[in-house]
Length: 205
Image (cartoon, rainbow, N blue to C red; front, side):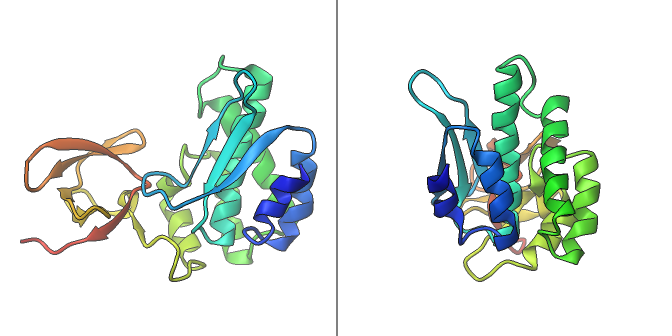
């Protein structure tokens, strides 16, 4: 899948390219560098009919966050190839597969030293979204540029007032798996908002 490698060669650490190429060569899938999405960093869609597997990763992630997200989604592809729809999306099979891929990258020293220790711990029990691992999220942010994400909902304390990109203001509530039950300030209605959503903290009024 040389086209897939070509599309991301400037998005990931150079050391990771030979590894990714060896992973991708055995599978047919579409890899999309996506526009910025405020509710997720990447996603995977299983093949169906004439349509191949599809993986997308947000274009604004720094190279290490991009690689981790890409690895996360590629693990979904491998699990589908082995088990189809017979296992949970982020069950033990996916956790083991993602950890295996991540360890290959770590063994080849793809990540800087300050990320390695955190990623070794992350690999022991991967979360459904890297945003849920606060230590990893905070460390990855050090490599962000001005065009990469600022703050994710999962990073905020419960009760924090925040605004989404559409300017609607909410109060962060309790966690419900990968989402948080939040109350919109103006309407008092409650909404489930993904922990990966990019937000701006606002002062209490």
